[in-house]
Image (cartoon, rainbow, N blue to C red; front, side):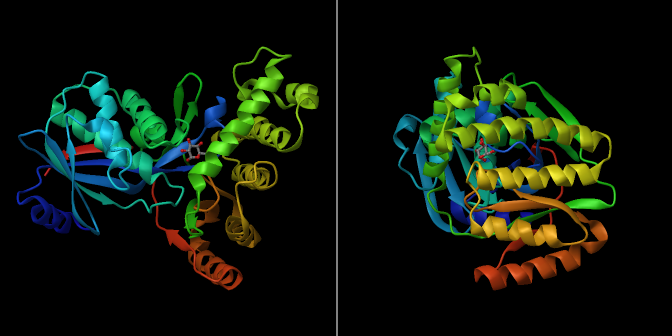
Length: 385
Ligand code: GLA
């Protein structure tokens, strides 16, 4: 949506002009899937697909929210922020506001219009983008200095404890801390991070949405978390580790006998994926894109066979990508069960890639995939209108 149009919508919803624009990014993850909540390293990057908030400070005691494509205004009373957990729309915002207040931030009334270009339920972290952008807007209006890592942690807390999704820190961190043309190598145990240039030469990343209808992703996600927790507890009986990610593949082989069934498979994915992240970052730094592509493929196979979070739509989409001569690798990203893939594709071949993969996918699955034009951008922006 164009800025002018969004500002008109703001006018219509609130009867006044927007004064500020706050944005936070959706994200991709190059590699390191389902390891953030096991203390592993992840390698995400912030996108041009974003949650844009048009805002103005007001008087009174209410945060008013309006949304592109949705009629009406949602009102959050600053004295009752604990009471909006059941909202279908506005609960992420209420959660962020609630935990800011708990931290002692004196929130002020404001009007916020949401124009989110991160597709919902796509695995590109629209929820993190909404949380982070909301936190930035509320901090700015409260006139309180903030640290973006704190914003990420607070946003994660809102998602965990207010919206009830037990996510790790990756999405909110990428959304708040992303940097143009870089991926963020984040250690999810210490929150130490390093920006690595996402230099792909004559290649680029193609992001494709399999468009599978959103179906119980949150509850399936929470089950995976329990399974790796079970694995960790079993291993801790013989080895003093805090996180599964601490185990090398060799160390895992020695303690594997303690696990069985799906719990063993889940833990194996985590350990091997952590090893792949290390190799992938080395390959990228060395300009070895063929190796990076191979690691992306291995990550997908592991998410399919060991972690079992792919499904036929994501498997089909990434397999079709892999069949393309000018594609070096492809994998699902995010929580899975639907959502997006990334593929490393030669820039000159993108058009044909999208056409052929798109057609074959629609034939196999019965509905179309969506392909996005993406670029890697800064995580958050704040500007006057
Ligand atoms: C979701 C969660 C993240 C992470 C990924 C899987 O996006 O929000 O914290 O666990 O799934 O890597």
